[in-house]
Image (cartoon, rainbow, N blue to C red):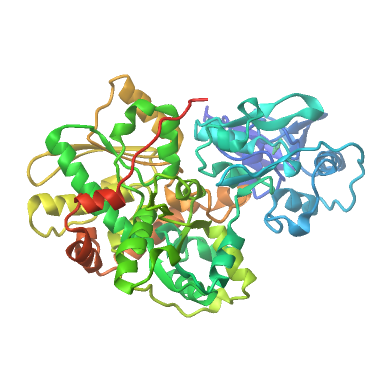
Length: 579
Ligand code: FES
C-alpha cells in the first residue's frame, strides 16, 4: 500500500491516502476542527490559523498540512484551543461587530466559530482599520469593514472564475481586498457573477439590495406590478426556510408572491421557451449561412460581460437573443400590455433570479424599448426570502398555487435552463423536431447533462447536418475553451456557457451554503436533480409545443426572428476594457 500512510489523530490510528491534509483526515474520522479561510478547491491560503493542531511541539494549520507517515496529531489541547481563540479574537478586534443588523447574521461563519470557541469577550482593543463601503456596482455591495481578509473571495474571483477583479493590496495593518488601482467595483472587470458573495464567510460581500424599491412599487396603487421567477429559484428558495437542499417549492413560491401583492405572477420559463424559438432559429440560419459560428449562448449575463472584457473580438459569435427574463419583460410591456389594455409606462416588471449579474443586466440601456427598461428590478432568491420573512408569511405551510397566464407558463425544456447543459438540451429538443418535421420520441439528451466542466458532443441532426457542441460551466472552464479555440485546437458550431459552476442553480443570488455543509452535501447535484424532476412533471416538454408561445407568434410576433421579434427580443454587445 505505497499510496497510503499511517497517522494517529487524538489517539486514533488511521490510514490515509498520500496527499491528504490533516483537516481532511480528521473530518473523515468525524473529528471537528474549526476552519474559516479554507474553502475546498477555492482557497487554501491558510491565513486565519483557526484550524491549528498540535504536531509534536508545533502548532500547524491543518487545512494545508499534508499527513506524513507516523505523524501524531492532537486537535484538542489547551494550547490548541488558546491559539484558535487568539486568532479569532484578533479577527473580531478589527471587525464591525454589528451582528444584529448584518445580512449574514445567523449564517456567518465567523459568528459560528466564535460561538463554537466560546468567545465571550474580545481582549484586544485598539485602532481599527477604517474601510470604505462600495455601493457602485448594481449587483454587488462591498462592506470592507466586515472583511476578515481570508481570501476566499479572491480565490473564487481569480482561481475559480479567472476574472481576477479583486485581490490583496497593501501590506500589514493596511492590507485590503481591492480592485485594480482601488477603482470602484462598477469600473472594474467584475462580471457580477456573485461567486465572491457565495465564498465570503461573513457579511463583507452581499448583493446590492433592491428590496425597498420593490416594496415601494407594490405600495404604489397607480402601478401594475408583474413578477417573474427563474427556474433555479424554485429548487433553492425552500432552503431559506429550513427545507432540505433540492426541495421543489414552485407552488408555495407562487402563493407567497401573490400574498406579497404582485398583480401577476409569471414564470420566466415562458421567456426561456421564447429564447429557444429565437435562438434555435438563429442557430439553423447560422448553420445554413456558415457565418458567425460557433453560436454561443447569451442568456448568462456574467458570461456576456466576461466576453465583452476578455474576448471583445468574438462578440459576433454571441447569440443576439436577449436572456429569457429580458424577453419576458419585453413581452409584458408590449404583447401583454396591449392584450390587457394597460399603458406599459404603468407596468413595473420585477424578476426573481438566482443571479446577481441579472441586476447589472436589467440596467443595461440596450435592454430597453421606447425608453422603458424591459425589466425594472431584479431580486435574488435571498432577497425574495427576506421579503417573505418581513411580510410574516408562513412559507413552509403555504398551499401551492399555479402561475398566471397568458405568458406565465413554460415547458419542461425551459425548466432545465437552470442547470448546466439545460439550454443546449432545450435547443436540441426543438431544433431536432424543426429540422426533421416530425415529433420525436427521445427528448432527453443526457450527453449534455452532468457536472464535467467541459462536455463535448457531436450531434447529428435528422437532415444529416453535424453540430459540434460544447457545454461549459464556470468561467475558468470557459476561458480554457476560448483559449483552445483561439489557438485553433478546437472547432464547434454551438457552445453553451454558464458563468457559475453547475449553472444557475449555484448562481451568486442563491441561498449561501457554509463551507462545512458544502463539503458534506453535493448542493449542485441535489438542486440539478430537482430541476430534472420538475421537467419530467410537465406535460409540455418542448418549447415549440408551448401553446402560449404558439399564440404569441400567431397573434403578435409573426415568426421567429421576424422584424418585430428582432426589435423586441434581440440585442447587441459592447467592447469593454481588459483592465
Ligand atoms: Fe486553516 Fe484558515 S488557516 S482554515
